[in-house]
Image (cartoon, rainbow, N blue to C red; front, side, top):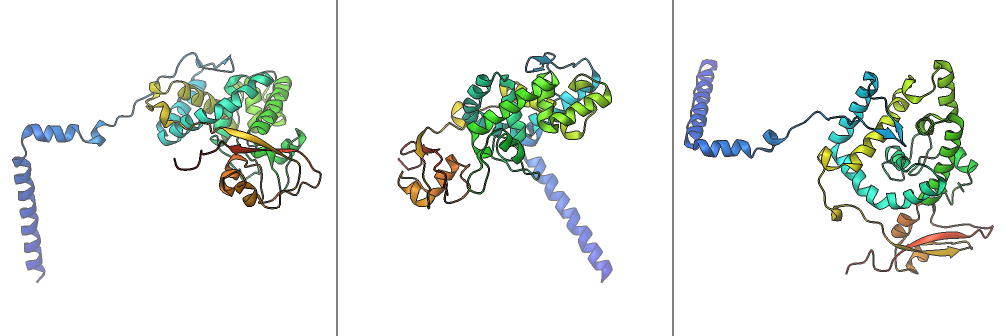
Length: 311
């Protein structure tokens, strides 16, 4: 019985091979070539990336002549270029949120390059970290309160993009004054002013690029510069999109309240929107109600009429 099975299996294999040969011979040579040329696998190529020799952060040059610095910069350009889905999302979100962040940075005298710090901190979303940081700028509770943000069960202004950007600017300016450079100030946003100062003293260094730091802080500045370079030069790095592919800022009007709100779902209906839309534009409101026993004045963003309704 086993011998018969082996004979039948061998016969079947011979027949299958013969059919494949006959089928291949029946395809004209030019059609076979065309099929291979149209195969997306054969058309996809991965290229090494040329590291620009004039990269800088906030006007402070990167010492790319140093082979260690060059390799670290090359790594971040490669990782962020070939993580295409993430990079495309950054292009889309940057179009929507950079116009809000940029004038606040300018108001505080913070270099425009720091908007890319928000990109790597949160991906321009209201992210939540395991350590308890919140919002676009990933502000910790103590830091937020120190710089005047309201943080409680009802309200968490770390989720308020404009207010949290003002706080990030104040912290960065403080770091620059303490540490002496914008590059070190950016690194301190990740590791803390005390953490960077300690390493500068221990290692007897005076700049970020001479420090041996942990994985996260050691990559931090290079990631910022990589995203800056890619977002500013999309076609150089293989990204193709039209203006209409990008996310657009949604116009809003501001409503002032100085009383408690017992039901934000009902409140939203007064403006022809639902609770979800209200919270999308005011993520700093953390509960379905607002106590406000102190009669504090709050400003709530309401999207322009008709934005979320079908034409």
